[in-house]
Image (cartoon, rainbow, N blue to C red; front, side, top):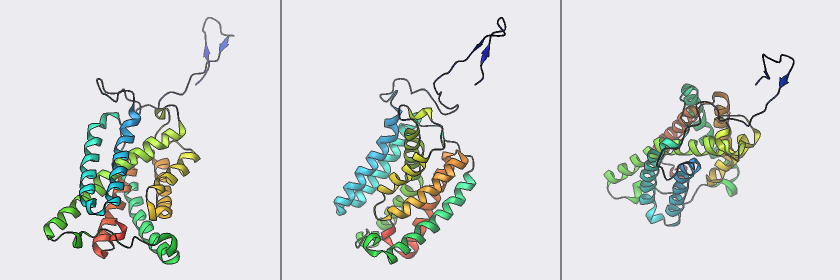
Length: 255
């Protein structure tokens, strides 16, 4: 911003400074009458919190894993729809580049993880008893119904939820701790570039190193395109191709 010069006093210059303003097209007023008005952070945190709680629930009681997965898919999707007015408007520019990154991501994810499992089995050995729907259910119809929900959750629900949380909310929160909306989507900073990828890895268990590399790829996509939509497309593409890999190889440990 330039200095203001009064036309009546051409020799007098007044320098003003103002606090950082929200980036254009990203700050939107909270919905009127909403219980979350002014607390947009909760709209990002609640779906992720519920998702992780149900992941823990299904992992702690394996017999309830199918029910927990179906519930988290439906409940998280419902939350995303109900809270949609609190989210940053998603731009879908560079979605083609997101598609390319997503394809590269599946090559990196599967290839790197298989190599790590062979080279460092004590650190990256797959789960000895992954959930296998073909043996868990007696009815083929139930098997494929569960697989369908599994794919829908991985391709349509998880990418939206995770990209909103990791690379929209948490990224900007690390840049602007007092008000995350003061940081632009995709605004550069070493802290979010590395920190979000590390946090992303924490919730991916045995795939932590693989997920760090994948997270850095998508972080680069975000910084380059400033497009959350491109990141969602990349995430969805990788998850879709991972589902195809699992169904083709029956390597259920990747799910």
